[in-house]
Image (tube, rainbow, N blue to C red; front, side, top):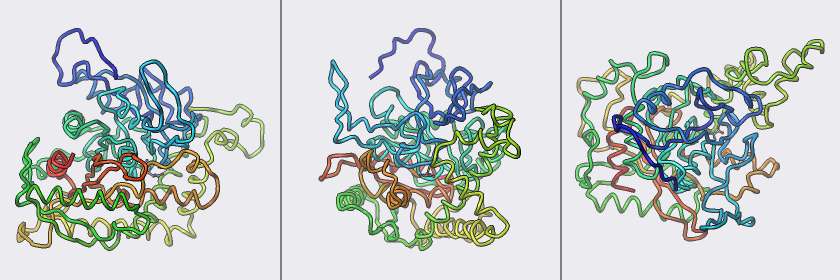
Length: 462
Ligand code: GLN
């Protein structure tokens, strides 16, 4: 735990509060590497908007946190600077720090460094980014809160892009209340981010009723409807996770909520659609790392005919290279229609699944006058597990056999739908596995812009 001796005036809401940042947020005082050798010596001339907002509120940056290279991964074993270990798998005592070798688990990715920093008490909260679960999955593995607000709610300006139509600033903290404190500071319109939710949409959003009022703190859930989407009951789910999911449902019921089974039929396509869209965008975004403008440059590149960028781009890790090749392929003329466009259609179908189950209308779509808020089949939030298992062992994620590559992608199956729909979701620690004692998180998902309800229910569940 860090104890700070805070001196000075207490003007901002976060004066003296230590915050860590995933190493893809540009900071002018520390390098920003994105977990890659490509940006090993890169120092941004400016701060990301969210970093500025927190600093203006008085927060102190305690450091940058390790991550999967360019955000690509679910276990944080793909960083050029080495894996992040789950703090629960490291033995601490007052005088020494020792690794328990047989039991080293991953912290989850790609915001594993941020989750581990919060879980081990190095900071009050940490920012991460969630493109397809990268805040919620490590939160579940490390036993902390991981909150992904709606897409566009917090500025992405200064967040180095992986897949910009999916990238969302996320918050890791010990409690939901702490996450809300940070969220209240960074959730605002930013003219520098063309995808930031405009003041007009923000005001439409706040005029639509939510179950909870802003920053409310009540345990009374009478009148709230919670949906259990049956498609999240995937065959890979471990027994102890199913047990805790059931416990979470009963717990909310005991606070007055009614529980409804709902269907989001396109959930099963989410994983494949995500990996087509994210990789396509990544192949385009990462094209800027050519050794000409900034970042690493292999000087030999100049001497070889026809290989202007190849030697420089050799510095990317294996996983990043694989994804650039796949993403480039899905964008080629011959496969664009079969892959990219189809994946976009699936994305729209996944969004409509959510719009159909939520009571609250989506503020991004024209609001129908005859909308019934009391529709019996509609719900306020969904409850699902976050991950199919507890944190896997580091070795199992490092193994290079083909099955394991696929397995690490499958870990994201429950977090991807909310990312594709751009809707808010949160992972809340809800107990530990009866088998290995590692933490398990439950996920709540709400309608686009309905952070009030999401955080309100999360406070009851934690
Ligand atoms: N695990 C997913 C991927 O590898 C999600 C990563 C993320 O959200 N940054 O793409």
